[in-house]
Image (cartoon, rainbow, N blue to C red):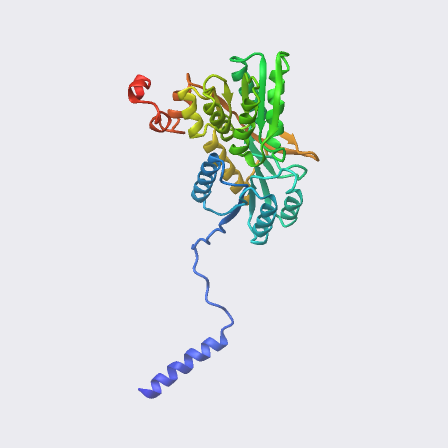
Length: 350
């Protein structure tokens, strides 16, 4: 038996040694596709809407088989530059950037593209950079909507304008939209034009408070977003003027929607944030896998035209808040009418 086993082993070794052919690989087993990795750089999470943008984007990207590395710059432009460099060094396939400063990231974008990394500028345009795609709500239309809403209440008088920071190019676009309407109303006087750094609620409160303390008559307040509008409304409330002076903002934050139904804020602007974030995730994956088709629209970034996908905003006021906000599921009726006694709510929300 021992001799038979030795002979068998020798035969196996002989044939193994004589054969130069490797055992064939099993056929029909699909290779795992490489997962797309997206670097998402956000300027901050202070503004309420960015949380929704982030969550919808990450959820959609995950459903498409992509991984997302998220970075929050906490309103620090230098930190954002460093975080974008980190994402580039990680070898992500695509960068999606909400820039804190429109001018500071051009070099970072160029570094990314030199390494074959595609770049999407999300909501805010990165200037002088030549990104692969800019995807945003039409900010000029936001300005036109805000102006048209408040002009119905105050076609003339002392206006207060509290914008976001100059480093945000969307602020420039909103201002252009505002001007396109206000130019037709020569009776509007600019009592104050102020840019609030970091979209600071406190700065908006301080500016409006100072005007009221000086005895200035204010007929209307236009704010760059709902956070700024909230600061202005707080100042008006302390002087028992909330609801007496029309205030507009944008983003349809929950506090703003509450102010609208309570009468403290004339209007806000709803932006289809969930649709925007979903589409950005879809386009990021398409850029990574080579299936991206550039849209026909473009915008000049200061150096060149870049492809742009626009989403359209909608005015939100007391008359249409149910249709635009509640029925769409953006905010619930219970959230919006929380501060109004049940017997004073519209019948369908009592």
